[in-house]
Length: 503
Ligand code: BG6
Image (tube, rainbow, N blue to C red; front, side, top):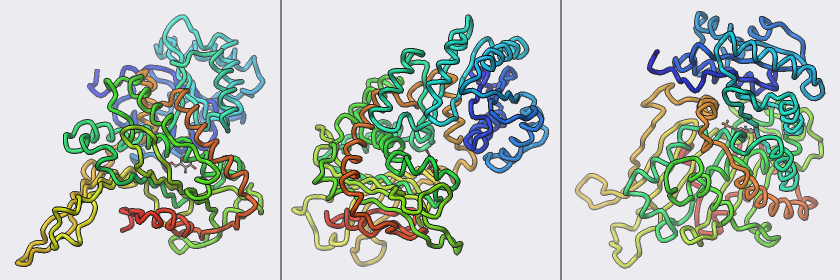
């Protein structure tokens, strides 16, 4: 057997929502990349389910077009032909057609016999959350979750619920149908290379961990800026907004990785136990702190790379008087021994001037007693984790400027991982599919993590309800750095946002 082949992947990948955007942009390109890297065993099959009628060949042709556009490797026709023979399309109404499930089960059993997949099935729910429970119930009722051989797992996309209450109800109902350990709730940020690297950088270097606390850290900043607007997802985004689309999940998950205590070991449960403690320690907002420490925004029309962009209110399926937020900046605290008193600044926005996600750890300056006048201009030590688009990190230190004068300068020790390993970083979805097949739950969110993150979000939502009348939207132009108030949010504390991607 080839040394790359990943035996755990010898299974059937069943996609509900086979004709949707996620399948086209992420799932099929990710699985093709796994084949490109010679990880896919011969006994691997994809069965996509959609409501539209089409033949296997029509579906394969459509997937070819999207893989060509979205795959990180250029498509090799010979390999694609081999890959596409393993893709099958089934159409039925997965919301109501019980007979469709029975037929699907029979088909999957036939596939098991033909491709020796031994009953191993990864059901991927790439559908809106209101369909999660119904699909799982139908799978259960048709004995598709407890086959006599192999394993059957469910992967669900975010959002899991739309509030604390709906998430609780959904979880309660689902937990009666499937065990927690068989449900893999996706947060694709956990699959990103540099998010995984946080564990290595924090716990693999004697340099950082002793300083990783309120004694040495001045503040933490997490920024996730996107160039894109809402594209064709206006209907979904109107209900989610940036709060539920980014903050409740991706941004809080990044924070947990940065702030958690060293886990006992690197097993999934040990990591998740520590992450949940961070979420439990997040200070909820009061009306007063909401007014002081949160800035919200919505983009209006503007230009990005010389292209005219419409405002959010003009996007398809968006109300012309919408008050949905497309930008948010918050200052929050983790009330525990390690980080008590350290401000955490988090911001995210759509239609910004750059695409960049990064985490900045700003260390405190040395105490003044030993100061030399030559050191007047020294800056803070910064550790910047560059999550995307460039992957890597840099560490800013102060050093002497070469020359006869004793002058200081700020020097960056800059490591560009994506320059060193060109095309080598797997896409988040490749890693997530692989890890779910390996039964590694650490890259997926456990229910209690979600429950606490929803609680935190709920405290923000209360503030939003009380203040929507005062909004003057839009309040930033597409293609800019967001509302000016977000700059005041940090500057009034005598600090600044670090924008290392654009500085
Ligand atoms: C998704 C959000 O979860 O993450 C999108 O629904 C957002 O609105 C996307 O654009 C950002 O992901 P990435 O990997 O491009 O940073």
